[in-house]
Length: 193
Image 1: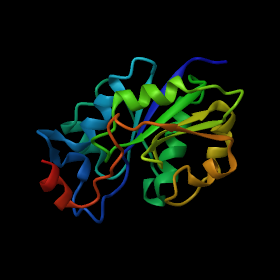
Image 2: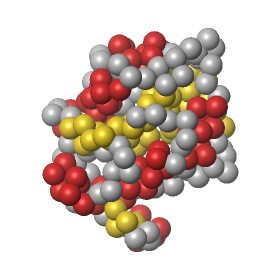
Image 3: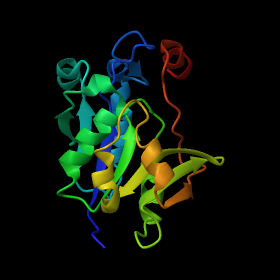
Image 4: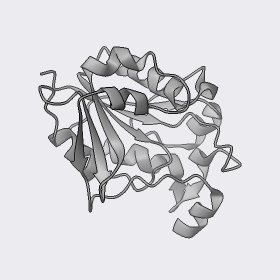
């Protein structure tokens, strides 16, 4: 088993519903994207980390502490989350046996949830792992190397959903270890600020 695990944060979207680059919106005193980056940086089992950017990449790079993550620009980011996923997997594929994926608009994702998912890894039994919160599937998601090539065929804004539907998937309870609630609307920042 290849024990090298890469971290992947997807943050390339335009945030149309939010109305401005939500990666830069201040949440608890720092840009929203930094919360996910900090959680990945605090997960000791991860090796290299990549953050995929697209819309507003220059402004994000100028304003956000990447916490050691390597930025990757998805030129086709407007095609949806699958474009970001393809770009991130391609950047890590030669250096990782598995990839843990989170989203840049989930400020309550935790290093503990990431470590819990990684700790459940056994590629002989599952090609993918997915965190659950109160039984609801969410992030982080872990993909084994056996799924990297299949991620190249994903399209649209579904991310890895179709890939996970065909994979040997194991759900990993992460209750009490943060949560993966997305911030999609500006009002959510005010509620949680």
